[in-house]
Amino acid sequence: MLKKQFVVYGIVQGVGFRYFTWKKATEIGLNGIVKNQRDGSVYILAEGSASQIDSFRDWLSHGPPSARVDRVEENDYSGTHSFGLFSVEH
Image (tube, rainbow, N blue to C red):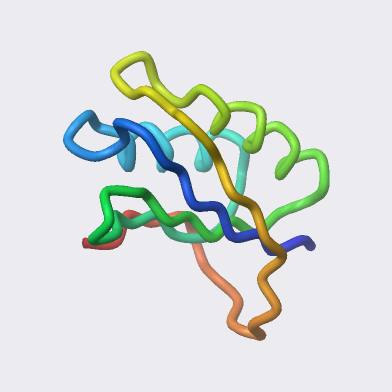
């Protein structure tokens, strides 16, 4: 299993981005979390197979129709915590 951190920038808060991210991650079968950050970006930690992460990364590059994604930063997650079902954190 791969663990990746994503930070999505653009118009991604107040447009349902976390909900649609949860929906897509659940559809793909990922574990992890999504949450808003104070700087207006959205933080995502996703855990899954390489093909699941690839599919999710492709979706994140444009997000839902209500959002405008300017850029996505991606890093490996080196923590040892394992996540259950994908969830939205507040």
